[in-house]
Amino acid sequence: MKNANYNLVKMLLAKLDDAWRVEQHYSKDAAEHGCEECRQLLDKILAADKEHIELLRQELARHIKSDQFS
Image (cartoon, rainbow, N blue to C red; front, side, top):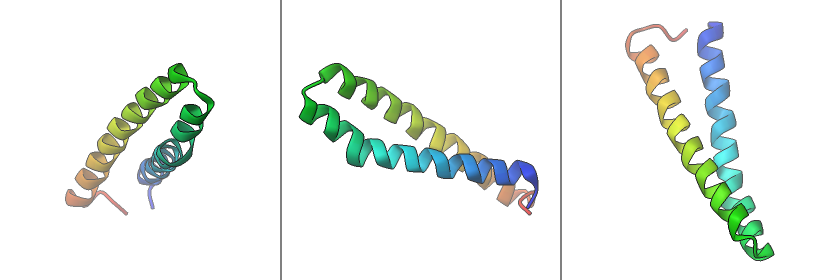
């Protein structure tokens, strides 16, 4: 696999993992702790991660469709 493709896949995996952790654990922990500011911050981070996930997914799809993914 070319380094550029590997990097995209690696970044996508990291973003997916981060988003999952925020959704499943971090936001709940902030809410249980009673810190509304932390929960709001985590919501913003999650939204940015989801945007980055979509950008990475689109770029990987473009590489695959144009036969650049190897």
